[in-house]
Length: 139
Image: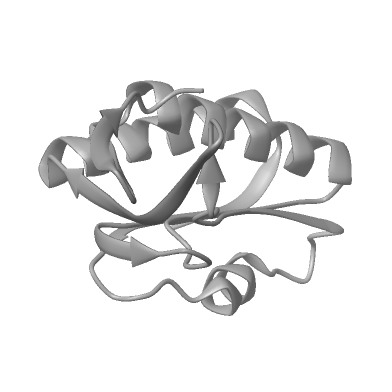
């Protein structure tokens, strides 16, 4: 299989994703790593909490990956998302894509994160010094 999709409670390993998508025929690997930043909209972020409707999220992530394989000549796709409480600097999402050429890898990786944020039932709560708020998955 050329798709690796996971929703995990433990920290994500970026190198695992990169190593999984590497193939001898791949001339390009593109990786998106989302990290928890320390400020949003001028407010200090203490941590984030992610929740997922896991069964549906896995199906949606698989759907995205299959669409990617139809749109671009890709070799392998890894899409890992973390749930639970994450501190500033931790990694909630890693997407790695391999292809013979960089353009396909770049375009597909961008499509993956943008579509994931719009369609996958994973929700994010931002915790600030003065409160908390559930935020939309998309920018």
